[in-house]
Amino acid sequence: MSDTIAEERPRAGSMVPQPTAQSAATSPLTDTATLLRTIVECLEDSKAEEIVTIDIVGRSSLADAMIIASGRSHRHVGAIADHLEKKLREIGVKQLRIDGLPHCDWVLVDAGDAMVHLFRPEVRGFYNLEKMWEVEVPAPKPGTRSIVRT
Image (tube, rainbow, N blue to C red):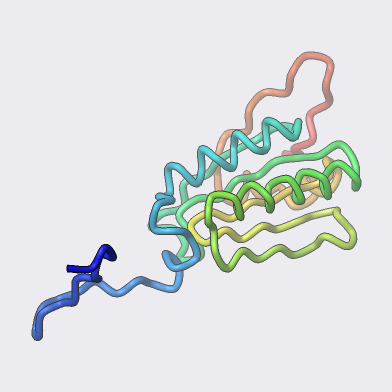
């Protein structure tokens, strides 16, 4: 007998679930909860501000969750995006897509089951995605300015 483990093949006529395009973007070992926890921890490590997680299951076919965060400047938003990309690749996220890096006003990181929006404060206030998805925005920390317009 060989030391290698043979893959178990499905029997004829058996139902084998096929991966969807959305779930194929993440490693089989990375479920949505682990992915979200990793993203939020990475954003906190990068000193992202006003991190909001929105559950969009049943409201959008794009992803299961949307995470919105702010950086203090163009450079900070770019650094957050770079750090997040490295961390997601470490945990095995495949087909990672990032848009908006040259300007870093609004960077979108598509990690399959989670979409991360990184904004400069002025841009986040202008687009106001939290209001669009009808979620409560956390109260700003003492000594900081609120960026969400009502």
